[in-house]
Length: 273
Ligand SMILES: O=C(O)CCC(=O)C(=O)O
Ligand SMILES: [Fe+2]
Image (cartoon, rainbow, N blue to C red):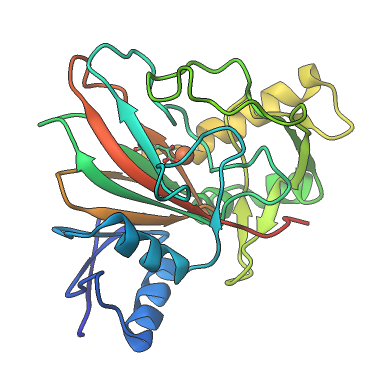
């Protein structure tokens, strides 16, 4: 297969043309992998794949991860169906974050396959955390170089109907996860500003929440500057995959009264330090 990568914005993201995800050979996968490392998020339009085929493509990237609190499809427990119904007010992933940052081994990547989308609305935003780090001053880079963050699962977050009554009871209370604030990417080794919204990334290790908040709030606002982002408009059929090690994302909650359904697989990541 000859692949074409079309950048989605100046900051990140690329549409890959020329790939049929039902049938990817090793050489084509190596090209797709390289495009992911260069662009942070990739997507393929007009894919007609079954859950088994989605899972096979996901396994090319690594081991699927089972979410600690969200159950999967009965026949494919690795696939979580994310549903927002017309009456729901909450959107899963509606704040800037990287996936499973509340665990010591956050997800390497996340794959979403659009099953049902509103005519307009429900786009996903992505932010390039390499660019966010690079744009900091040398003084700020030196100041944050050795800081670590304290991250904890946000138990109080709202639920969409897919999760109501379906959430698995965790076997034990959530444990905190400590991550470097400046994290080298496991494959490119380039530094990333590794941060999440305030109910997950709670404070800097050895600092109080009050001391941490101004700095973390500044870095969060900085990391989402429009020039670091791209925006994916869904239609039925595209499959997207992003690299949680250098990209944050956010689902837009702007389609009240409509239904949106995604099939999601996350790939297990490594310890961050
Ligand atoms: O539904 C979306 O657009 C993204 C939701 C999300 O945060 C995720 O799948 O990790
Ligand atoms: Fe997410």
